[in-house]
Image 1: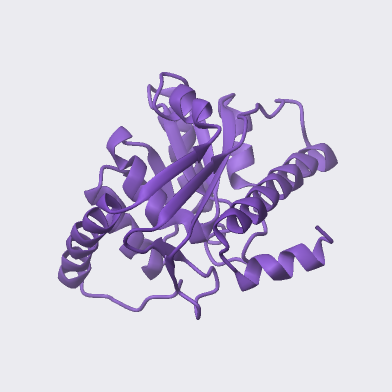
Image 2: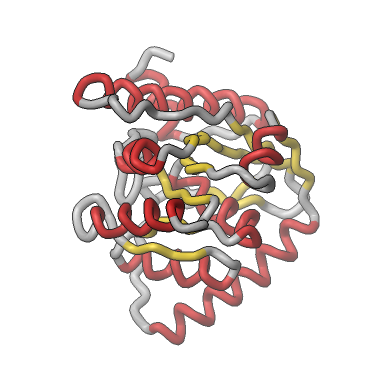
Length: 236
């Protein structure tokens, strides 16, 4: 999602406006969970976890789970400025960085957060600029270094606003929609995994999230052109 807003006062105003609007919309929506026990145990419970999702899912998850104050990595781009400003206002602890600029520093913040009393961290697997539904290794490395479980999450809904011109096809629930949140079983990344073995864990995370997204989109009859392309490329 590419946004060009530079005035920090306007960014702040838009963030508050978005929060107010989303709060009203989500009051009208119904939510169904798949594997809710993992959310109860790791996200709402007392265990530490690294959450990974797709860029298209970010806004709803930030709003829904901001109250538990996770640390989330945002890119150092202008798009990241807007999302981080919004996220901070709903309770997220922002860390800044990207795969091309400041990424190492951002990852270090998440690892320190987990090692010094923080419990939940996350960011998007395909950020900051795609390609959509192709995972990068950052979160897997963070989970490995911190010794914390990684948990793939995704969602879709029966009625959404989709940013059709954006690279990520960002979605936001429409009023009175049925939202389905799909969570996979959390797992650990072995400390010794390096090279090809480490890359295998990254690809496995990617494949898990792709299959989850395929299934949850089918449940609500949502069509995502990016996902359709990935399913053809991967013969899924």
